[in-house]
Each structure stands twice: as C-alpha cells, then as structure tokens.
Image 1 (cartoon, helix red, strand yellow):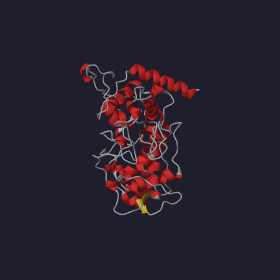
Image 2 (cartoon, one colour):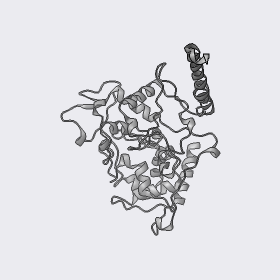
Image 3 (cartoon, rainbow, N blue to C red):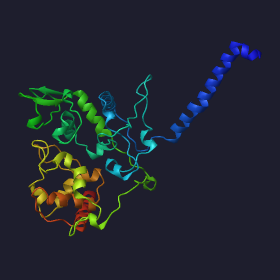
Image 4 (cartoon, rainbow, N blue to C red):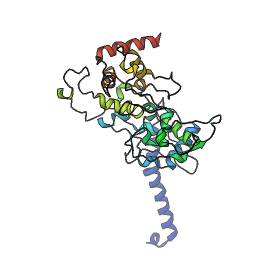
Length: 337
C-alpha cells in the first residue's frame, strides 16, 4: 500500500506508462507506415513556386470543394488514370519545423477532383481565366470568382501575364487584366498536380463497378464502339474550352462549329491536334496534348471527333474507328522518326 500513498512513485509510474504507450501505439506504427509507403520512384517534388501556390490553395479554402483522391470506382475514372494509393501522398514533407503539411485529400467533392488536373487541363491560360471568372469557361459552374487575384493595368509590363476575358465579364473601363504573383503561384501548383505512373502496370489498381454495356447504348449505324458516349467524352475532355455549343470563347479558344479542321474530309489534322496539341494561332491560347495527356484510345477519339463533326450544324462524314487507328499509327511512326 505504500506505493499508492507515495505521490512521487505514482507520478513517475504514470509518466513512464504514458511514454511507453505513446512509443508503441503512436510512434512505432507511424515509423512503420512511413517506411512501408515511400514516395513513388517517379514522383516529382513541388518547386518553391508550387509550394507557395499550395499555400494559396489552402488559404482560399479550395480544399472545401475539391478533393485530391481518385477512388477505385468507375465514376472516378475521368479524374485519373488509376485509383489513388497511399504512396501518392508519402512525399508530403513538413511545411516548416512547427507545422505539418496539408495532404489536401478533401472530404467533399462539390467541384471536380484535382489529382490529375495538371494533365487533364495543363493550359495556364484556361486556368487563369477560370480563376478570374469560372462562368466565362463553364457556364454552369458554382465556383466563386477570384478577381482580387488579378490587377487591371493600363500597360502590360515585362513579366506580366495578361488574360483574355470575354467582354461580358470584363470590368468597366479600359485596361488589361493581369495575374498577380499569388494567382500565378496557384496555377503553378494546379499544373503540378499530375498522377505518377506506376512502374509495373500489373500492380495498377482496377476501377470497380463498371457500367454494364448494352447494345441499346449505341445508336443504329453509328461507327463508335458500344459503351462510348461521344457527348460525355467531349464534355470531359474538350467542353471546358470549346464550350457545349462548340462556339469556343472569342479571343481565348477557337470555335469547332464550322471549323475547317473539324469539317475536313481527311480527319488527320483534327486527330493530330487532339493527340499532340496545337499552337499556330497567336490570337488563341495554345491547346494542350489532350489525347496524349489523357491516354485516349482510338475508340474514344473516334467518339469525340464524330460528335464534333456531326453537332452544332456540322455535317461531315462519321469516321470509322479503323481509320482513326491507322492515323494514330501513322502519327506515332512519324513522331518516332
């Protein structure tokens, strides 16, 4: 009983038990978890500018509406090439000595997942315009606008990044809209969000609960494969720039409605643009290599271009998947020479 009457013994025993349990229950599992989930071999570390952009992302509450976790279900497939794994987040280091880093996996998905947004939408011009006024590029967007991350200047100076804003969204009066340093850092961070390729394709997790494909899903006479919806694929890969009506945005993104490239009987240039991007016109922003970045198959490209060639008053012939595959093989061969 003397032990229970001696407060020093009680205090020292309780303190020792506390540290013992902390070590075995918290510290050791954390060390094992850290060793078991190392960063992927090809994972790129964020630069100083991208880390600053991450801080801007956190400070403006972007994590409240956007996740960074691709779940292993079929409905998440548009957000990444594969479901997320623990190693995707293992490279996060401490912000500084006092603060841990933010993982930013998110808890709600009001806006789209951003895990692979650097590949899905690598255009800085599009991202800046979307940040300034989301409804300028996505009419139905519920995202708040961030015009305070931009300045109106009478003259663009060296190092400034000007954005072309449609007239209906421009502030009254003359001037050029220029991105601030914070806006450029935030976009740098978003463009850095790219899902790392796994070295061994055999261990890539599968997307589960795939939609059952039925013959009725494909209209009679269509050249697209069963289960491929050209409208949905266009919406996922092209609509944010070229708009649902195919008319694009004046001064920012060209129209597909009535486009000679889209309507050309030979679809080779159109397919080349989708796969490898396009930047010959100074009046428009450069188009990223959507097909290559999203790893679109011949069947998916067929569905997209046939939607573009037969919508909004366009009346070009539908291109069979076999012809698209031949053109893709030719483009690949030309690129390798």
